[in-house]
Each structure stands twice: as structure tokens, then as C-alpha cells.
Image (cartoon, rainbow, N blue to C red; front, side, top):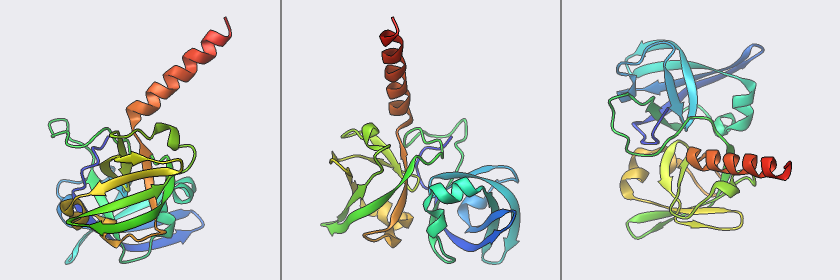
Length: 207
């Protein structure tokens, strides 16, 4: 479980596709503290398991084994060496809950359609897959590349959010541009409520 509060802007060290799967190397500094083999790390909001750790002079490089499904359903397939990625360690039981419930299970990949500065802030508009749109609620929560954000407005094809200077400076959003793919995870509570209503409707129709 994560909160969507990004701890560090990490960097992709390398990507190695192979017959047995895809291996992803991520260089971290701050977030490497206290991490053990088998721990969960959210990389651009995608929950991955640390399979190997290598201490280097320029930080620690984690190795992750990616399933083909993970590769196909996230924006990691568009990543290149040197690119920044949002990193968050799994939530500690005694930690502060600063964002919202984020599972690290990506619901789909959206596309940035507007990304520009507006005064001291930035405005970001994202076109979301049809499967995610039912869960978009004005003033509700959504995770964009693992960042817990508040939906400012909902449109027929996506949503708008405002990015404060701090979020821009400490996350990989600073590298994004119009057309960039972003990982999206809809609000977990909204998904459960929708499923509950759907199940009750199906049950009622059988009576």
C-alpha cells in the first residue's frame, strides 16, 4: 500500500528485455535507505518488487523483474535510460497518510493533452481510457504516475489537475510534455463503491 506522496525522483539506469522477461534497473538515493530484497517500491505508481540491490558510488541500483503484462499495461514500456521516475516506498504502519489509498496497480495509461505553466503553478489535462472515466470525480483523488492528485475538473474524455511548484520540482512531471503517456490509478474507494452498486443492481434484477 502506498499514499501517492513521492519520496524521490529516481532515474532509470538500464532496461534489459530478454526471453525470460524484462529487467529494469532504477537508481535511487534517499529511498534506498532501509530497503531490503523483496520490498515493494512504487515506480511511476507501479508496484514492483526489489529483486536485487547493488551499491554504487552514484547511489543504489535496484533490479526489478517485470512481467509482460506490467510492461504492456504501463508507461514503463516507453521508458529510456536516464529518464526520471517517481519513487515511493510502501507505507509504514506508523507513517503519516498524506495522500490517498494507492495500491500500485495501474488501471490504465492516459495521455497528456495540455501541460503548461499558469502563474506559479502548472495546469495538466489528461485524456483517460474509457474504463477509468466512470471513477473520475471533481475534487476526488487520482494517482498520476504514482502522484496523489486532486481532480479539478472532469471532461468527457479525461480530467484537469493543478500542479503546485513543489510537486513540479520533486517529481518526474517536470520531464513530461504534451503527448506523454502517464500511469493512472483511480481512487480505490470509488472502485469498491462502483463494484458494490453493480453487484447490488445485478442481485436486484434476479429477484
